[in-house]
Picture 1 (spheres, rainbow, N blue to C red):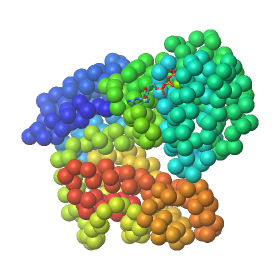
Picture 2: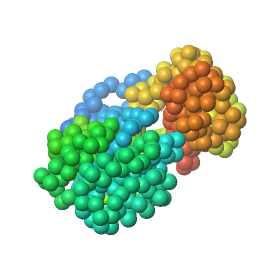
Picture 3: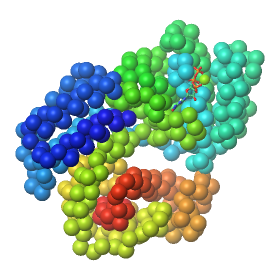
Length: 430
Ligand SMILES: Nc1nc2c(ncn2[C@@H]2O[C@H](COP(=O)(O)OP(=O)(O)OP(=O)(O)O)[C@@H](O)[C@H]2O)c(=O)[nH]1
Ligand SMILES: [Mg+2]
């Protein structure tokens, strides 16, 4: 997504000067790239005006170059344009998926089942698409692939009845209902979804939309919200459409919160939505490296460099080195992002928290510390009991760890040296 913007940013970064002409050219490039990604024209005009005005009028703060200053403004603006990172509940409850024909509902039902099963839940799916005979088999297969329980009746005609039977039949923690698509949100789809809702009462109602609808995602999200009250959207096919950016921006503009994005046809191709991921991806390598060089100069006590997979052991040792909250601010001022662009809990490493996390990790086995992905629901309960904490605190720690690992993996790609990043992360409290 936004590959062109990435190219434009790199062109600007590698230019010899960041003068007014270069800034105007960058803004023009970004403008064109956003239009091509099907972002609404008025929004594009607001965004480019803002970048241009701030980049040309604001004074460059001490310690950063003009180029870095301009890039930071671009990152800030793009991140804001892409809306909030998804706040995924640890225990989501039951989920209803709805949307138009071919949006990716059935595939996403499987991906979500897989996502939550991996997090220690027993998941079941119900085939409430009684319009197409093939829908039953498709979901049955998807359920099998995802390791989820399945309920459906081949000859069924009343989707609400199937859902009501299915919820009786399935003995699971999370039930996901896959509903039928339509060409448009017509009266019959409204009625069908309302009838399902009546018997199902899901905690989450997600609208599934394909990336290629671009900016019309806004109108569609608003229509479904009005009709059945959705509490999130899932944008699929981000991998195969150039309009994904437009769809995400449109969602942010409509106040529909994007919860997940689908990035392929396979089970694991589902990501919790986080605009920081997209924006970080647009950072050009040369800039990142020069910034890291700066950061390394600030580093007075280089730690031993760790090799291989980033484990909870690494996370712990880095975390325990953070003693001075002031370091955090110093590092932040060296980065081209603002605090609120970084994963939200990165700045939360208070001493109290570090102690709680340490106690929690004392209750983990070496196996768990080395491969935290095995920490399922049962293991979480054991760790919480062993450390006198709560399951949600275990979840929070794992979340924190995953964010650190994510960033590590991301920056690890390409020509960057892992050591630099590790030092930076440890300074950031991670
Ligand atoms: N590339 C790609 N393809 C996807 C993604 N999600 C779904 N698909 C494909 O899109 C097509 C339609 O997906 P379905 O899950 O059947 O869509 P649906 O909304 O259930 O369709 P109906 O039930 O007919 O309304 C399938 O070929 C999927 O493999 C994705 O994230 N990326
Ligand atoms: Mg389907």
